[in-house]
Amino acid sequence: MTLQELRERLAERAPLEAEREALFSQKSALEERLQREKINLEYERTDVQDMENNTLKSLFYAAIGKKEERLRKEEDEAEAAERQYQSTQKELETVNARIRRIEFELRELKRAERDYELFAKDLQAKLEAISPLLSEEDAITMARLQKELDEQKQHQACFARITEAGKQLNKSIVSVDEALEEMYYESQHGSVFTRQERYREVEARKQVALIQTTRFMELLSKNVSFQNEYCVDPDSLQTRIQRALIRCYNNTPNADCMIPDVPNLSLNVAGILSELEQKTERSKRHQAEIESRLSQLLEKYQTT
Image 1: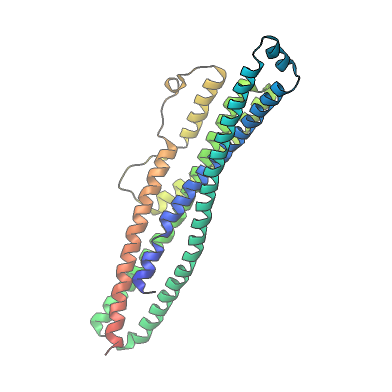
Image 2: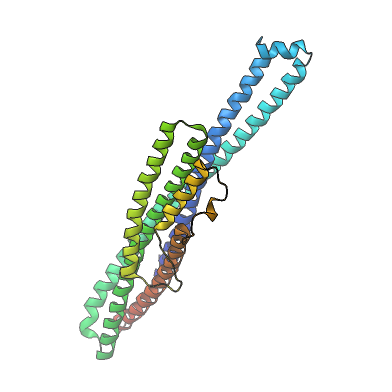
């Protein structure tokens, strides 16, 4: 591959990874839905069996002369449940197939990454070899370009660390929200013991998210400035929990009005990650321009 082809190939990684992440979320939701639909299908099939056998339910409808009508209704509901289950199953299979394809493409991209790394090492070695031949002006130019190249690589490494920390924080926020949903369910249906267990789980996940929030904020404050203003406020997690508790135990739908607002942590983290992605892409374009200029400089001396 040429240098330009390698750059274009490597540019495919980010959208593929973003699509894979979205597909994993979709897969998780489909698996949960499929499990619910499986339970519903089994329930509907049991209703049909009850009407076909000499159960109390069957005898009751036979006694009032509506057994056949009720049986057809139960069969229709079972068929509808089965169609829905099979539809979700096919949708899940499609998502899994796309995930497998993306993971294959990402593995293939590793070859392009290795080729690019080899190109970078080869370019550096050749530049060192011609350095004694450079004119004073070209020597100054090469030194400046190599310094800029090192800076861009450092920027990208920094952006990658912060981006990874932000993604981990987002996962923790989602984990807290999932625990809050479980807590709400247990508040309506569970025992006092299970309610306490769910609340302790919420607090445990919150502590993990707070640690990750602190790390994310430290990385941001030391390394990056942004065009937009973002407020990464860990109090957002506590606000979510307080509002959930009011809904759970005070049965108050308008809990949002009772707790002061704070900046939405997950939205602000998402905004930061989006801007980081833009910064990374600009840095990569700048790196590509520098490498092109260094390659041109190399060609100038290789052909003289």
